[in-house]
Length: 113
Image (cartoon, rainbow, N blue to C red; front, side, top):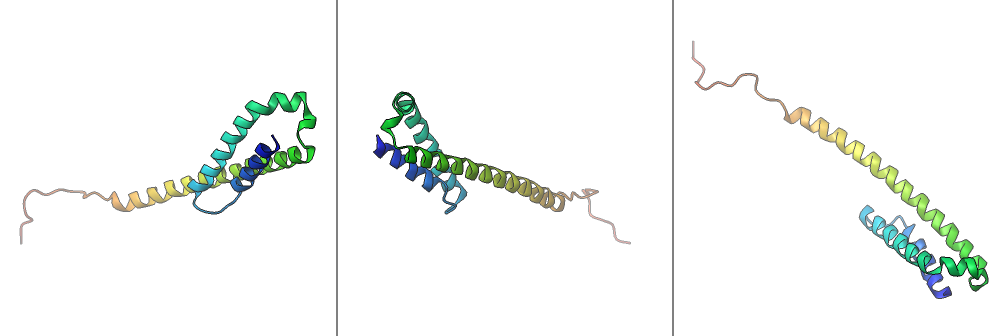
Protein backbone atom coordinates (compact mmCIF):
# COMPACT_ATOMS: atom_id res chain seq x y z
CA UNK A 1 0.00 0.00 0.00
CA UNK A 2 2.81 2.35 0.83
CA UNK A 3 4.43 1.59 -2.53
CA UNK A 4 1.30 2.85 -4.33
CA UNK A 5 1.39 5.98 -2.23
CA UNK A 6 5.06 6.57 -3.09
CA UNK A 7 4.31 6.18 -6.81
CA UNK A 8 1.43 8.63 -6.49
CA UNK A 9 3.68 11.16 -4.75
CA UNK A 10 6.25 10.76 -7.55
CA UNK A 11 3.57 11.37 -10.18
CA UNK A 12 2.43 14.47 -8.29
CA UNK A 13 6.00 15.78 -8.24
CA UNK A 14 6.34 15.10 -11.97
CA UNK A 15 3.02 16.83 -12.68
CA UNK A 16 4.32 20.07 -11.13
CA UNK A 17 7.34 20.29 -13.43
CA UNK A 18 7.15 23.26 -15.77
CA UNK A 19 9.29 21.52 -18.39
CA UNK A 20 8.36 20.80 -21.98
CA UNK A 21 5.44 21.94 -24.06
CA UNK A 22 2.13 22.82 -22.47
CA UNK A 23 0.59 19.65 -23.95
CA UNK A 24 3.15 17.52 -22.11
CA UNK A 25 2.48 19.40 -18.88
CA UNK A 26 -1.26 18.87 -19.24
CA UNK A 27 -0.71 15.17 -19.98
CA UNK A 28 1.35 14.76 -16.80
CA UNK A 29 -1.33 16.52 -14.75
CA UNK A 30 -4.06 14.39 -16.32
CA UNK A 31 -2.14 11.16 -15.63
CA UNK A 32 -1.63 12.21 -12.01
CA UNK A 33 -5.31 13.02 -11.48
CA UNK A 34 -6.36 9.73 -13.08
CA UNK A 35 -3.96 7.83 -10.81
CA UNK A 36 -5.11 9.82 -7.79
CA UNK A 37 -8.75 9.09 -8.59
CA UNK A 38 -8.06 5.37 -8.93
CA UNK A 39 -6.05 5.36 -5.69
CA UNK A 40 -8.83 7.19 -3.84
CA UNK A 41 -11.49 4.78 -5.13
CA UNK A 42 -9.50 1.82 -3.82
CA UNK A 43 -8.05 3.26 -0.61
CA UNK A 44 -10.55 5.80 0.69
CA UNK A 45 -12.34 3.31 2.92
CA UNK A 46 -9.05 1.78 4.09
CA UNK A 47 -7.63 5.17 5.06
CA UNK A 48 -10.83 6.09 6.92
CA UNK A 49 -11.16 2.73 8.69
CA UNK A 50 -7.47 2.06 9.37
CA UNK A 51 -5.50 5.31 9.22
CA UNK A 52 -2.55 3.59 10.89
CA UNK A 53 -2.00 1.53 7.73
CA UNK A 54 -0.50 4.63 6.08
CA UNK A 55 2.22 6.87 7.37
CA UNK A 56 0.85 10.23 8.42
CA UNK A 57 3.96 11.86 6.95
CA UNK A 58 3.31 10.24 3.56
CA UNK A 59 -0.35 11.29 3.57
CA UNK A 60 0.65 14.82 4.52
CA UNK A 61 3.26 14.86 1.75
CA UNK A 62 0.66 13.65 -0.74
CA UNK A 63 -1.72 16.38 0.40
CA UNK A 64 0.96 19.05 -0.08
CA UNK A 65 1.88 17.72 -3.52
CA UNK A 66 -1.79 17.48 -4.50
CA UNK A 67 -2.34 21.13 -3.55
CA UNK A 68 0.75 22.07 -5.56
CA UNK A 69 -0.59 20.24 -8.62
CA UNK A 70 -3.91 22.06 -8.28
CA UNK A 71 -2.13 25.43 -8.06
CA UNK A 72 0.02 24.56 -11.08
CA UNK A 73 -3.05 23.50 -13.08
CA UNK A 74 -4.74 26.82 -12.26
CA UNK A 75 -1.63 28.70 -13.42
CA UNK A 76 -1.69 26.77 -16.72
CA UNK A 77 -5.40 27.48 -17.09
CA UNK A 78 -4.86 31.23 -16.62
CA UNK A 79 -1.87 31.19 -18.98
CA UNK A 80 -3.90 29.36 -21.64
CA UNK A 81 -6.73 31.85 -21.27
CA UNK A 82 -4.32 34.77 -21.75
CA UNK A 83 -2.75 33.04 -24.76
CA UNK A 84 -6.17 32.54 -26.36
CA UNK A 85 -7.08 36.20 -25.81
CA UNK A 86 -3.77 37.29 -27.36
CA UNK A 87 -4.27 34.92 -30.29
CA UNK A 88 -7.77 36.28 -30.86
CA UNK A 89 -6.47 39.88 -30.83
CA UNK A 90 -3.67 38.93 -33.23
CA UNK A 91 -6.20 37.27 -35.53
CA UNK A 92 -8.35 40.40 -35.53
CA UNK A 93 -5.31 42.50 -36.42
CA UNK A 94 -4.43 40.23 -39.32
CA UNK A 95 -8.01 40.26 -40.58
CA UNK A 96 -8.10 44.09 -40.64
CA UNK A 97 -5.14 44.07 -43.05
CA UNK A 98 -6.31 41.18 -45.20
CA UNK A 99 -9.96 42.20 -45.32
CA UNK A 100 -9.50 45.23 -47.59
CA UNK A 101 -11.86 44.54 -50.45
CA UNK A 102 -11.90 46.71 -53.57
CA UNK A 103 -14.45 49.48 -53.41
CA UNK A 104 -15.33 49.07 -57.11
CA UNK A 105 -15.03 46.10 -59.35
CA UNK A 106 -14.63 46.91 -63.04
CA UNK A 107 -15.45 44.42 -65.68
CA UNK A 108 -14.16 46.55 -68.56
CA UNK A 109 -10.82 48.24 -68.84
CA UNK A 110 -10.52 51.87 -67.86
CA UNK A 111 -10.75 54.26 -70.80
CA UNK A 112 -7.85 56.45 -71.67
CA UNK A 113 -8.34 60.15 -72.18
